[in-house]
Image (tube, rainbow, N blue to C red; front, side, top):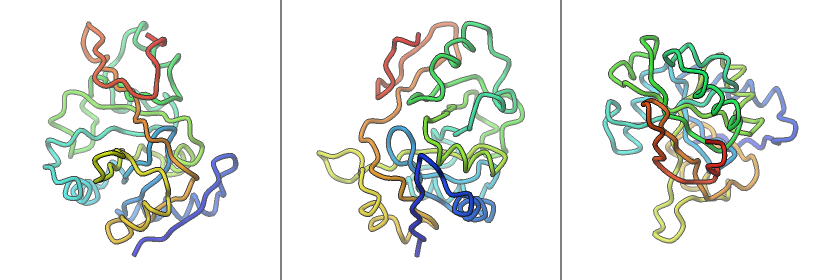
Length: 206
C-alpha cells in the first residue's frame, strides 16, 4: 500500500523530499506532480524499478518511450551527445517548462537505455520534482499516467490517483491538482526540428 504524502510546491518540505528519495534509492515507484500532468517515475539507474514501470504500462522496457526528468540543464552532457548552439538556445528559452525534448543519447545512458539512439529530456517548472531529482543526484524516469476514461485522458485529483494506484506504487505525492494537458514533445535529434506532440508548451520558443 502506497504512502500518500502532501508536499507544497511553493516550499517543498526537505524531510518529505528525503523520504521520497530514500524510496527511489530502494527501487520504489512514485507518482509525482509536474507542470503538466501527474507522472509515474523511478530512479533511472535502477533496472528493476524500470522493469516494474514497463510492466505497469504493458510494454517491453526496450520499446518504452520514457523521458528523463532533470532539475536543470547542467547534467545534460551526462546523457546527451554534444549539441549545437541553436539547439542549446532553444532549450535555454524553453526550460524549465512544459516541454519534452528528444535529443541524441550518448554512451553513458543507463544499461536499460543502451539501445536507444535518443532520449527525452524534461525540466518541469515544478519545485517538488526538481527538489527530488536534485537530492537523488540523477534524473528520474518519467511517464504520464493516463486515465481509463474515454473522455478524460488524465486524472488531475491526487486523491483519485491514490485510490487507483495505491497498490502499484510506493508513494503518491499530493502536490495539488494537476493539469490535464501533457507536455509538448519536440524532436531536436535531427537537422530538421520535428513536433511530435503539441501539448501545453507553445511553439513560440522555436
